[in-house]
Image (cartoon, rainbow, N blue to C red; front, side, top):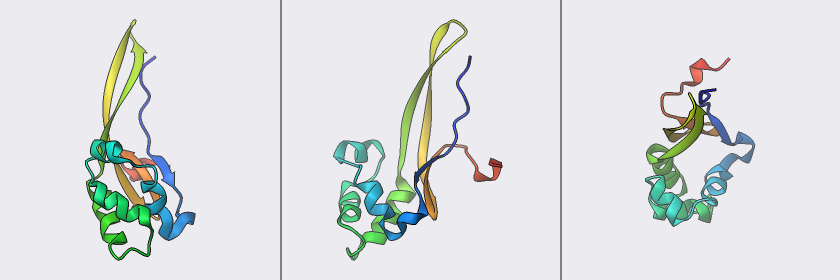
Amino acid sequence: MTATALESRLALSDRHGIYIPQLYCNQIDEEIAGEMNIKMEDVLICQSGPEHEWYWESWDLITSNAEWIETQKFFSDGEWQTKETKWHLYQDGDLWEVPEGFSFDEEV
């Protein structure tokens, strides 16, 4: 058995509206922000909510710059293998975590 192809992951649906940045960032601490290559200052602004004057600017910086690596371990050809995948954020109403190289055009 080999590793399966990675698909996008729905992080938050658009039903959360203007609170998507706040809800997503509420899961992020300083360590995670570092792993995602985003500034904790922007995370804190988004955590404060949509009333903050820099809320949307900070969210734009987060969605534009966020990327992180996940390591997947799987058993193949009689031995353990690892595969690293780079992820980023994509928002089209819904907020998605998307693996590098994934295209929404490929979904049916």
